[in-house]
Image (cartoon, rainbow, N blue to C red):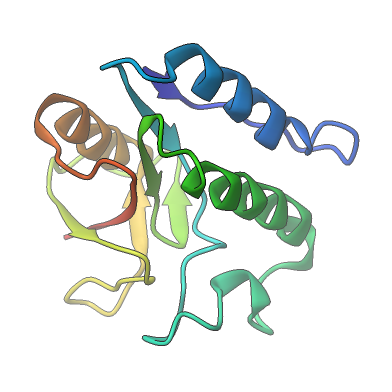
Amino acid sequence: MIDAFGAWTTETLPQHSTSLKHLCDLVSGKEIRLLVVGGAGSLYVNPEHTLQVMEGADFPEMFRPLASSMGRALDELRNRTDVKWTYISPAGDFQADGTKTGKYILGGEELILNSRGESAISYADYAVAMVDEALKGSHVQQRISVVAE
């Protein structure tokens, strides 16, 4: 099961948590995996995991409420030991119209950069990573991140 829920308004942002809880309850204790399209704002920018992307001075103010809401949903998801979940965060620059290369770099809890020093991935390459994780991934109860090669 893939959760690609998105909400943008102040009134609907809490649904990131409530909809994810509902999906978790549906697959609780089952072999069904739940893959979640996450955000980059909650990725860490230091190895101590004390500073997140969304806390940086250059993070766009208009995206802070969304990043915060998605981060809370991830925190709640981490408490679900009864669900085979994987939360997949895209690179910082998530490009709707970017080119599909089929190549990506897999990371973990920290914002990662490619060999050009960029944190970018197209929707198409993110989708490739999502399908790869669905078919053969082993990142159960983990957050992973992806960036274009």
